[in-house]
Length: 387
Image 1 (tube, helix red, strand yellow):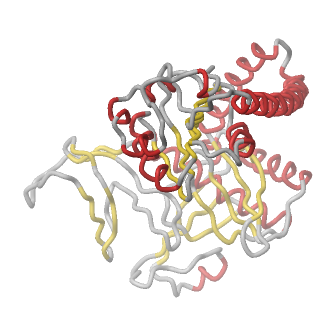
Image 2 (cartoon, rainbow, N blue to C red):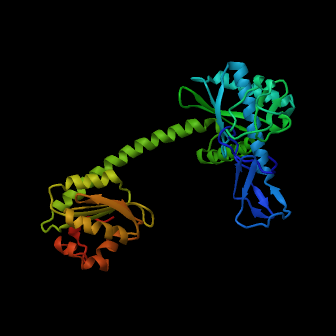
Image 3 (spheres, rainbow, N blue to C red):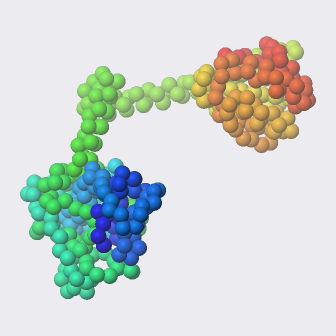
């Protein structure tokens, strides 16, 4: 199979396909049909034409570092702890190896990381061996996965000097020193009593360190304290935020009660109750509705800052709300849904939101508004406070 581009094969190769161009035309997709490599482009080329093929080397070398790193981690995890690799995945930012073990301790993870980086320092050569067929006796000594059903011909084995021999058709570095460094990040539970070990290798470690350092600088400025104190500061802020949120929720419930009492105390009650509270939330709106449960009134409540996405709730007679709800959502440049006399959604809040609805021409002549005995053009003190 002669091709500059390596293809992805989900049967035994979990390395992404290469990328590049053919006569400056971007290769959209690469696949395989038997021993033939198929490169898909959006421009037709004449048969027999000589073309210039350009490989995205940055992407290829990244794949090489992650893939060779996987071979090294897999070999040492097996030799040191007996953890067998059952699958792996080369991700866009982080890769992981599935290991057949219930858990990996912090001590084991640290020992494994030290060991793989020691092998990188030793600059072990990485070579390729080719066997004429899968039946070659020497292949019984190497780690191998099942071949595709349509595979014929030679078999390729990647050999890390003195460490590992593994059947593989992916791209690899030719010396472990080209890996630069490997960082083991975390362990997560996988399926069937296995774990996923996440890692990065080579240039990805440098990029990860750059990102961490920029985040560290930003947090140092926010917390006005050294990096070793960031976790402590963050924990304090989270606790303070939770306390503040509880206080806010209690105050909003009190405000909801007062707003409803104010409405009920009026001699001439409007059949339309309108309220906007920018600090409000779903719990605040529901508190209003509960307090007004025995009042035969159409309720329209909105929450959120001006010109930002917020919340709105419309409740009342089922036939009225089912008609008015979608129209109100449209007026507010938002979306919503509802049933049984309740319609709620997410508007894009314009300034003076209550006025925007009550003075909208589309609703002024609404039969539903007239059936509710609501004067949609004259918000009054009886419609509730508007903040």
